[in-house]
Length: 243
Image (cartoon, rainbow, N blue to C red):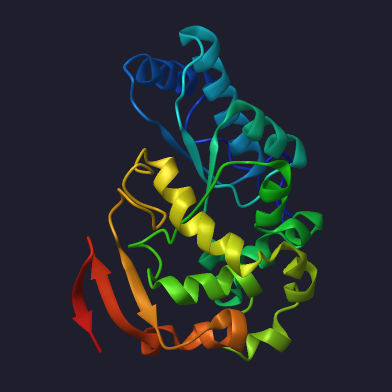
């Protein structure tokens, strides 16, 4: 973190900056796609410094490198990430009040009011990939959409009234159509698979599911019963499962 936790603790980075720069620059020179794990605001700045050092050393090219998590990040780092073309790889489920309670307990100051600021990346024009962080977190698609579009808990609905930070972070909820796009097309682009996956159009793999619910019409609460709402699953244009 750029400044200590409220209890005074302030651990240093796992990777010394000079070593991180060296490793990322080398990997970049070998044509490797790089994903760097950074949660705190100091960690994201260090990751951006390393990516920028690689660009300066190895020259311009399309990279599609990404930073994972970005849970505490400054507006300036969001602008830098966007300008550098780094993908913001984000996992809305971590913001579920069930999981975020300890997070907010450790960051009870102003930083907690900007917890998981997903919409700020969208407003900046960042490349966004939404994911689940599986196998660390549950991978089911529609509950993850519920997390992205409400910031409320599908696991324990009572937390909608007891989580002290819930109202403060509601400004970071994404529209449903944007959430779907970031989970599909955004993620396909981030792994160089947008020529095959991510959208339904001629020439791409027809991977989709058929739902008995319509969250656009019937409301986002229907996403909490997601697994009951799937009636068919198709892969490569072939039906592989039916309810």
